[in-house]
Length: 280
Image 1 (cartoon, rainbow, N blue to C red):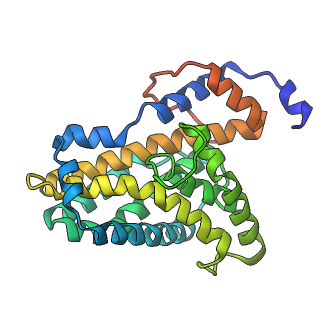
Image 2: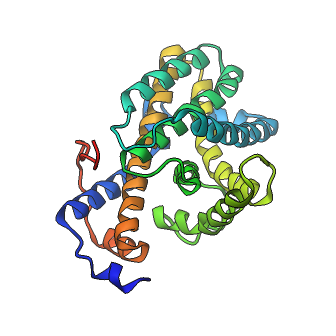
């Protein structure tokens, strides 16, 4: 690490933001929020789902990530930092969920690419609000990385639990995918480095998606609850994105090792008011 980076004093405002980030990243349990909404019958639904549904969900998730990344790249426009449109994205994803929830599980599966694109669009919007250049491939891949921060793939080999463990698990794949895309572009969806990263992220993201779809399949869930489930989904990943991109912003200033150490030492701050970002 550059010794000059470690000599920069960690400012009070940056420490405050790091505490906010830790609160966002460590106090959001999407599965529990969904369970609180529809009760516990999701586990019964999950047990009744045929094995082909898990395969279909996995395929739909991988496809949604690729399409979502392309959507983000094409629609973000201005790269200058500005306040994120969190409320607009919540309205859009709630409406999408109401449509899917009204028509049952099959429709919800078809709605998945739409809601995933909206979530990714909001994640990228938050990245921009934190001062990150969304034109950079590393930032675009970091948007996908947010989707892996929840959920758990039984077959992966994450060395521990929590935010930094997942970052470490994905780190090499993110770097390899970024290097490949920087050299050859994003045209080849099946490019091994990108495919490997997408597979890792999709495996973790799909566990959360499966819980979401199972909740929508509960008999008492209709259009309104389907919209609410999508809203919980969006709120969760907006919180995770805020925490993730605060950390990334501070890493650029202080270095990753120091930020990780400060993160471990600081207490979570239960703050709901969004800090003002540079350039707003």
